[in-house]
Length: 473
RNA sequence: GCCGGCAUAGCCAAGUGGUAAGGCAAUGGAUUGCAAAUCCAUCAUUCUCCAGUUCGAAUCUGGAUGCCGGCUCCA
Image (cartoon, rainbow, N blue to C red):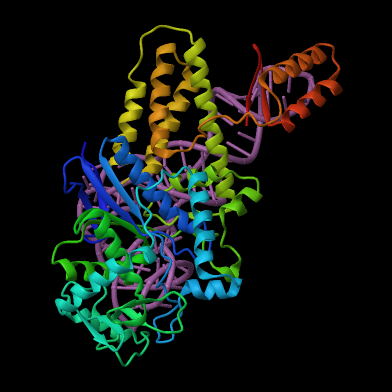
């Protein structure tokens, strides 16, 4: 089955063809580790993980790289542009290096909670200064860059394709007149490859001077090429990365090597909050902890993200998250039923093509630019079908296998049910027996007390005609 | 000023020419000691608005309105 993805560069769906048959190399723009990533950031990272899981499932040899930006990301492009990291470190009164450690650690904790499979490399900009300097030197050799004192700039006029990704034209950028005036630059749209500033805390000695630091864009070029080669398959990021970041990456990388940098550019749309932009002033920049504090699970957010297509502007609201949480519960409940039906199922050994049909729909939806929303519908359809019609032993086994494939891709279910509720299975069973006794004795107060006690321990009871089923929530 | 995107029920959201997926919520019923969970049923003659193309449009074209993004740090 062909995979088709939307390429931001061509603005159309393209059949995916890896550079090397059976393998895929991809790079994702990761966080600038100056403050904990918010749920909007994680939408992009969850998308990267979806791609990763898809290629894993299809048996590709995957090499996945996500950078951590820990230097060079300036708050603005002016001469006195400060490094975001240093600014935040000063605010927090900590050493910038320490801040990097703290935020990175938090980031990895978040990824784990979100069931994101670890990338193969998480390179940090500060560990790749020599590689970046090499790129800058090559650009100088090829006359795509020029040096003014201790600063080196990329000459956007030297790269014909500059603007191809974003649709910006150099003339328009100038007309915008919002670019900082910088007398050193030949053109206002030229961007920094290397800057010198003795005031910087994070600085390196180089052939350009004693106190320099790299421009933001160059880290991704240097690190991507180091780990993935000069040309690789897929590069992803948020829509805001398209310009200037990715535009500049292309110019730098191709300017340095003369080879195509990336075959497929994929960008996720922003997560909106209450229909608008997420912003600090509105107080709606949420972290995963904010969700947990409201009683949600981190994976509920993962489900919410998967319910929408990655190129659509998902609107985050607490209602939507609640709905995602309920929906995820429903799926987990169905999986429990399937598991039960597999061990104690009735009916014949013959399966049916219902599951195959659901699987086919699911796979088609995913193959067509990762339409998780439509794919999910096939899973719910299957659930509804079986809830309505019932299912045989063989069908349950088929369906469970399909469910596990779905979760291999979506990563929505906990790996193992936690037994940390304080009650062992035996204790739970004993309490249920006691409650059943109380109910048959019509001692409702006692029965309800036991029910509350179990609920407190996160045990969900299901009173049915043929007895009581229970599970941990 | 320049570039780009979106507008589908109470909420979230698929669907890009053939007559509106799915989830959540809601409502009625079954079940229950009461609940919860579960099950059954119902839930957009219609896709922001106006005009056009077409046998046929949520889907294409033009216009209006609203929202969002980029051009400056941002996923």
